[in-house]
Length: 243
Ligand code: ADP
Ligand code: MG
Image 1: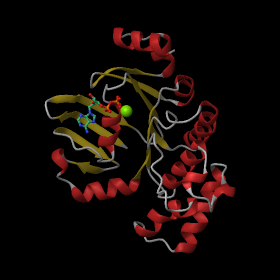
Image 2: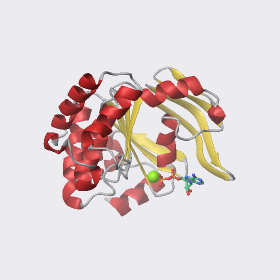
Image 3: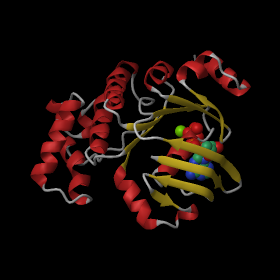
Image 4: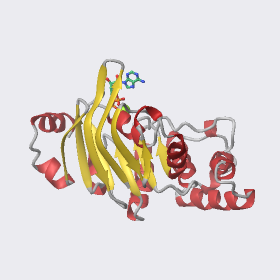
């Protein structure tokens, strides 16, 4: 689903991603951990073309993204096939919940309104907020807004889902409801790349954990291997701080 080879990303003189090699197979759930500023967000933003990179190769479901953004057609395809959920929900505040969800399927995929509405209702049911369809984002709790954001991403029938700290902006009592929805999605076989500090959740859902240190993959492995027997000094000290 994702093949990244020797990918390098700079912000000016800052070398943010250093020779990243990363293959993700269909159905795999990959959790990315690492200290603040290590490059986690930049890495997943490269996967859906939100960030350009300067060298290396990247292909997402067979669509090849080239360095410096020179691949507009592939970029368009990737944007429709890859869903993303951000820390700050990013819902359209002036649209109702249901309109937030139907907008892209109608505009980008050209679905009829009836079909988009039926799909949106089914997705709201699935994330447990069918009764909130006609409200506006500002009228919902953070946990509900994030579940709308998830439903909105799923409405595009993505082949791959990216999550960038989806529960970091939530009050503690709402984290569980969002993680539950993500857990369901993982069970259904969705390919997922998740940046999170929820180590219990990571341990439970991840097929593989990747630890990033200063823009490099310092260590990766199964949750069991990485949490129980980390090999790298930086992984060890990071885990000692967060576990
Ligand atoms: P993480 O998600 O692991 O906290 P980021 O990927 O957001 O890390 O950032 C990695 C590094 O790149 C940090 O040093 C950050 O300050 C820098 N950075 C991120 N975005 C930008 C940007 N748009 N312009 C300049 N530097 C950036
Ligand atoms: Mg980040």
